[in-house]
Each structure stands twice: as C-alpha cells, then as structure tokens.
Amino acid sequence: MKAKKKQPGFATRAIHAGQEPDPLTGAVSVAIYPTSTYAQQGIGENKGYEYARVSNPTRTRLEENLAALEGGIAAPVFASGMAAINAVVSMLQAGDHVVCGNDLYGGTPRLFNHIFTKFGVEFSYVDTSIDENVARAIRKNTRMVYVETPTNPLMRITDLGAVSRICRKKEVDLVVDNTFMSPYFQQPIWLGADLVIHSTTKFLNGHSDGLGGVVVCSKPEHAEKLAFLQKAAGAILSPFECWLILRGVKTLAARMEIHDRSGRIVAEYLAQHKKVKAVHYPGLADHPQHELAKRQMTGFGSMITFETGSLKNANKMLKKVRVCALAESLGGVETLISHPATMTHAGLGVEGRKAIGITDGMVRISVGIEDVQDILDDLDQALAAI
Ligand SMILES: Cc1ncc(COP(=O)(O)O)c(C=O)c1O
View: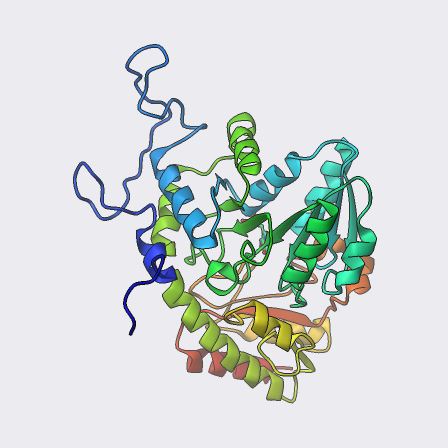
C-alpha cells in the first residue's frame, strides 16, 4: 500500500470528518445538544449559536461530515428528504421552469405538481436517460434540471457528465437526488452537478430509525440561500436525528460494500429464476446502460426491481416473505421489499405509471446486509407461491 494521499479516503472521512473528538471531554462520539436557545455574552456577542432553528452544534458536525463525503462546500440538513427537496425548489420563483426526470420517487412529482405549481413554478417531465431529451426540454425560463440516477423504480441511468455539460451551456443548475447510490458509489458534484440531494433516511443513516434530508452544495450562493431557508421555513433536523445519521454514516463504506455484493448476487439469482419475467439492475450485463453505470458509479448498489407478471403474483409472493420485510423505504441494514404501484408510486395514478412503464407486477427490493443465503432462501420460498 502506498503512503500519502491528498485527502483521507472515503471511509476515513465518513468516520472522522466533523466527528473529531470533543475538545472539552475527548468523547469520540459527537455530543447531542438538545437545546432550543443559547446564552449570549452581551448584545451581539455569542459563541456562534443563537437559536436552534438557525443552528445547532450536533447539526453543524453532521453538515460538515456530509459535505466532506459528497465533495461539497456545505450540506444543510432538513427534517426529511422531502423537506430537502422542498427547500431546493423554494429557491425558485413564480415563472421559473424545472426539467425533471419522468421516473422519480413518487413523492417528488407529488410535491412539484400539487404544491409548487400553485405558486407558479412549472415542471416538465422527460426521460433524462436520453441526454437530448434534456437539451430539448430546456426553455428560456428553465432554472434547474432535476434527476435521480438510477431512477426509482426502473433503474434507468442518466449520464451525469453529459447532462451537466448541457446544463452548464444553458446556465441551468443540475440537481441530482443521489439517495440510491449514496456518495460511496456515486459523486455527482465531481461529475458536474451543482446540488446533490439525499433522503438520509435511506443508506446514509442506514438503520431505518430516523427521517432526514440533505442538500449538498457546490456553490456559496446556494449554501447561503439554503441556510436562509432553514432559518426562515424551519424544516430543520433535530439534534437526535443528526446524531443518528452521524453514527450511521460511520459504517457507510462497510455497509455499502455488503449491499453491493449481495445486490449483485440477488440480481443474478432473480435473473435466472423462471418465474421472474424481467430484472432491472444496472449491475447486470444485459441492463441497457450497464457500460454507463460502470463508468459513472463505483458500485451498483442493492436496489433491484423485478417483474412478477401481475398484481396477483406480486401479492402472493409479498405475503410469503419472512426475512425480507414488506415495507416502504430502502437503504436499511434489513432487506426491504415493496410494491411500487401501490406504495411509493401510487400517487402517479394508473395512467402516470403506464406512461413510464411501472407495472402492477413490479416488486422492488432493497437488499440488506443479512447473510445473503438467507435472503435468497426467503425469495425462493416466496416466489414458489406464484
Ligand atoms: C430517491 C428518494 N428521494 C427522496 C425521498 C424522500 O425522502 P423522505 O422519505 O426522507 O422524505 C425518497 C423516499 O423514499 C426517495 O426514495
């Protein structure tokens, strides 16, 4: 092993960035500061903290940590992934336009179409896995291109380098929801993104025990606007939830390695199963964008969507799972299995789902870090019910 790198490696940053031992006591775990306000020394004299909606020491540490992991300059955290997305779009004004992926987490278009359109922000939805669609959809009033890659649940990949070049030319910000990959497997800022969003509820926390969201910024003007939104709108993350993420993130690198290894094994297993009609996983050689996935990501992760053929089949198998939990969400240490049409993407309606190819027979699995043989055995007995 060679000595001396410019900056510490990912796992080292995950454990140490913002998580330095407490200067007062030496405690190696960041302290939780459950306070709503801070005693001040005089008018305009304080120790950097005035009121907890504006800032909190536990939150500061988490924000430093997440900025270091994504290669950003700031990483304001919010009460949930949706609160983070809400803050990003709140930077816009009436008359602005956003080009979005057409296969996003269902809650995202729900927020855009039901809340922000009321305030005059316009949204167009296109398949961003085809770069030209993005270029064509950009108008004079477009301010942002908003993508998830891989998409949820179809696992389509957007070429972030190519789309960021389009955005740069048109002076439009590129926003990437990096929840599925985590910064361990994909670094959108290095690929040209301006803002990176995570639902920290998923892989970053990793233990299915707290909601949260973050927006990692590469530009000071975004960092300033989002800090203002934390203060003005107040959808901030509590100190305890911040601490949960700080703890979870320490094992991110180790967890992601197992998620990825087991994800590949489960995807291969599903691909050869005679009752499974299709498997959507960028790590499979027959995924239409496998080569792009290899270039853009350093792993394929553990999100897999597969086709059981019908709602009836999906229900039969989902009723039988025992190791896998039938639940919304993803990215936890435990394997979570879900039914996009009736759960995460119910809000799109039948036509909306049909338009982008989400079927009633689709099942999405977030492969956890249990012994992979137990996950395979569980899927095997559940699929036998079809
Ligand atoms: C890709 C993605 N982004 C954002 C969200 C919203 O995050 P939260 O549930 O923390 O509000 C989710 C939730 O499932 C998600 O899957």
